[in-house]
Length: 327
Image (cartoon, rainbow, N blue to C red):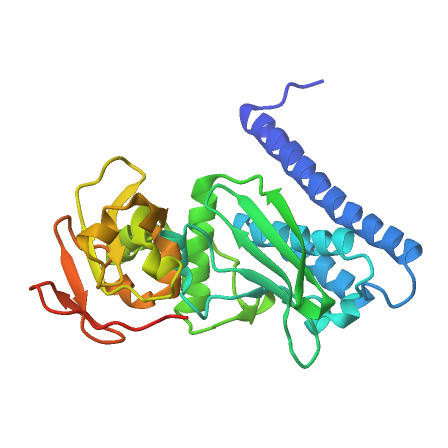
């Protein structure tokens, strides 16, 4: 038998590789078909409607690039968590048979990615008048997923499920850019995933520009970091229900310390020198009861502010603080 030429050998290698890839792809599709067939046989009529299964198969068939594949995995894991943990729930009870929505309308993709360190939430809703969530999912840059499941038509959190996507962090970054470009930039807000294009991986220039946008969120990132740290607070605020009337930031004691001290505004030295009258807590707990402090929370060490109204503070010049209660 005549030995094939170098070009012929290369063609045969390419042909075998292509054939193997096609076989693997078909195996994935057939596996999906087999799973759906088994589900049709095992479940009662009408539960987890067949239209959803058809949509899921179409997603598998269309998923020819990494962006699609990640979104497929996200949807699959969310819907599998619903099936496993809310077994009495029918997909007929969910909006559009259980479609997954990308909820970028609150903060936007960039803000959530850089500041909250996850993508905007992915939601599945109940199909009723209140339209509350059945599942809320957060997906993180390392591929981690946290799925919160709600029963009683969304009124009660039933289960928290941890999942993980087998992806590179670089692919997750590309997905964030893809969603920003194809949802936020096109003003597509809080839409079902099948309405958002995801058939192209962003190029290096677009990804680089996205990364550069982080600088716009640095103030918010600083505030986020401070909110998780400790502060000293007067019990007149935490126990008696007064809002912050006076706030100052001192040198940090360690990495856990924000440097912030919060007082109601009328405490004297005798009150503050009694350790029973002060306590440590996270800054975000004070921001939760008095959101007005957020505008000043990343001020530098040495800053001192006095409350001048319900929503405003001003620099401390020994003036009397405006006092009011939060409860």
